[in-house]
Image 1 (cartoon, rainbow, N blue to C red):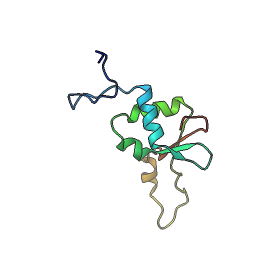
Image 2: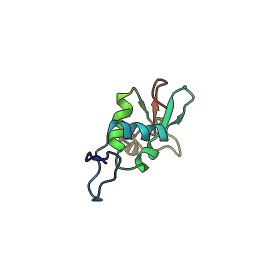
Image 3: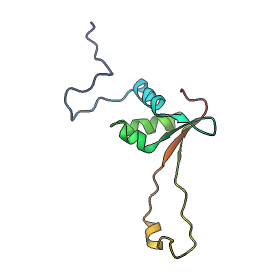
Length: 107
């Protein structure tokens, strides 16, 4: 056995997160990604959030490898009986529902 630390070992203290590394993030992306109709891969935001504390690192990896966030559709601005109020739409801060990876990213 070597004295080098194992990068895949969980932290011995639960409140200290193990720093994410490139291989670990790539493995997470590969595990969570599924085929997209564009020919690339797609990862749901909810899947990344539930995968653990590496959400920020995973999003940074996706953006660094040409991935783009898919934002929810913009609600109609036409007033109607069941349309949202103008005050509600001003406070709406859209978060991406999923991230689209181009065809060239690892599978």
